[in-house]
Length: 317
Image 1 (cartoon, rainbow, N blue to C red):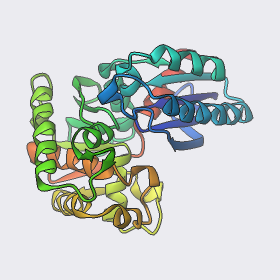
Image 2: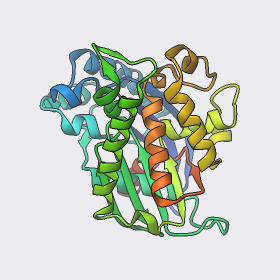
Image 3: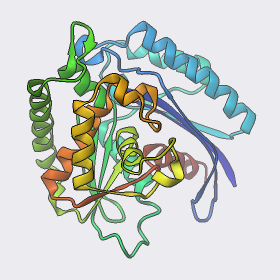
């Protein structure tokens, strides 16, 4: 066994996975998996720069993760950064800070690389399932972008588009420095039009409608599943490989976009860092499902983070 550590730093959250990788099968056994909301992408869509307070929140999480990695004795670490740091003018400050804390330089990957990692992490366990038909469409709805990937055993086509829960919230739902509570019909319509335009761009290169199984990843999707199941708290085991119907996604999205901050915060499975952005993330999911005619979404807790860990292990073999 090789013990590896993988860090995925996105627009809204930074996540850590420490796992043992079987050198023969490639199977991962989790030793530690955690997530911290840092909102690294705060204001990036508007300013083009990473905010000092967002950088400090992210560096604080990195320092905590460095201790965990040391405690577990991970032999190899790979740190991947996605949408927010890809877009920022001052990403060099981010790179230097991470290097100082963790001893590795973050890889600011392209959207296509992000898509490949997401697909591998999400579908590795599904390829032998007889109840799920290929090709898969994997959608990873992040804070700043959404990755759309179609493939069978391997990626056939992928596209990253700049519609994520944080970016859509900041672009359409913020007025006078605060999130509208709840948003107006005009705001929702403008957000939906933005999402649809992004999906038009995705369809230029990715045959979204050819997919037979939709697999949804990341916090917006897993939170929708938790709400659909009426979970008393966030439960990864109950969420992993759960299925949520189109009608249920439509119902939940409508409620999220009509509700107040206090009503959303009262949902027991809702992470506090998602309360203001979950409506936008759910709308991205609903828009994709309606566009491709998906009757349901298969929800996966395994995603880009697992793909990074697989690549880290493969690089050491």
